[in-house]
Image (cartoon, rainbow, N blue to C red; front, side, top):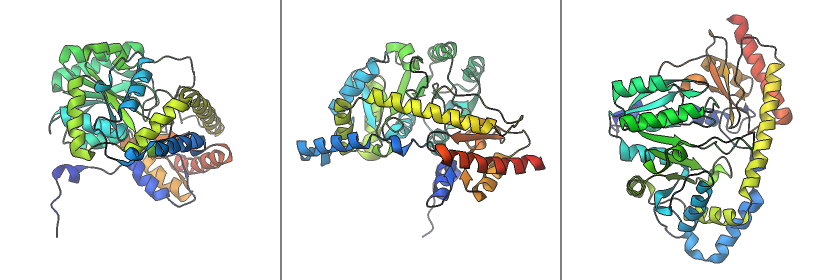
Length: 396
C-alpha cells in the first residue's frame, strides 16, 4: 500500500540531534551533540530506593492514573514552584511526558493551522518540529545577548498578530543565554498589550553555576494575570528516562491540556510519577542539583580551556552562566554541516547551528554539549574537533 501522508508530516524535518545520536549509536564516537546529562551523576541509588518503596506500597503503581498526574507529586511540585514565587494549586498543574509533551499540548489547545507563533532566533529545534507538525507559521524574532529584542517583537506582533510566543529565557538552547530582567518584563508587557500567550520553557533554569544567582521566571513576574504558561522537567536534574515534566497555567488552560493529553496518551507513567514522588520525599534534590551544577560548571571550564588552547582568533563564544551548551561562532565562510561530516570521520560529533533557526540560518554556528563528557575523553574529543576545524579553516 502506498500511504498518503499528511502535508504537515511531509514538510517536517527530522531532528538533527536525534539523527546524530542515531549515527553515533554503538560507535566509538565522542559526542558533544545531544543535550545529555552525565550518567555517572544520576542519583541511581536514590531512584532505586524510591522505586522499591513504591512497589512495597501496593499494585496501584502499575495501574492507570489521572490524566492530570499523581496528586501527591503535583502537591510536592506546587511547593517547589512556590519557592520560585510561582504560586499555583494542584489543579493549575498537569504532569506531562517530559516538557516536550507540554510544548505539544499547549500548541494543540491554543493554535490552529496557519496561526503565527513567535520564537527566538535561534531556538530549541524540537519546538520547531512541534510547530511544523501543527502547520503553524513560525516567525523568528531577532535576539541578542540579553534575549529577545523587544522592539522587534512588538513590530512583529503588530504585523503578524501571533497567538503565542515561545521562549527559553534562562540558559537557552542552543545559545545558553540568560534574558535580562528588562527583556523579561518587556515581553510580559507586550503579551498584555497585544493579547499574546507566552509559553515559557525552563528545562535548564536550575542548572546555574552561581548558586546565589536569581533569574525570575516570566510566570513569577506575570503573577496571577494568566498570560504565561510555564513548563519544566526532571530530565536534566534527575534522569531523562523517567520522562516526567509538568506545566502550570490557569485552570482553563490546564483543563484543556488534560483533554488533549487524554487523546494523546491518557496519562504519563504512574510508576515513574510515584517513584519521583518518593524521591522528592526522601532525597535532598536541591543538594543534588547544586552538586551537578558544580560538576557541569567545571566541565564547561575544561571545554573552554581546551578550545582556548587552540589559539583561534576567529572562533568565538560567550561563556554561559548555566545550562548545558556552548554556542560557537566559527569563521563566516565555514559551513558547520560540512564540518560535522568531516568531524564524524574523526569520531567526534556536535550539532550544526543551522538546525536551530526558523529562518535565515547562520551556517557558521555550532552547538557543543559540555555536560556529558569530561576528563581525557573531553580532551580527546576537542582535539579531534580542532583537527577537523583546522583543516576546514585552511581551505577557507
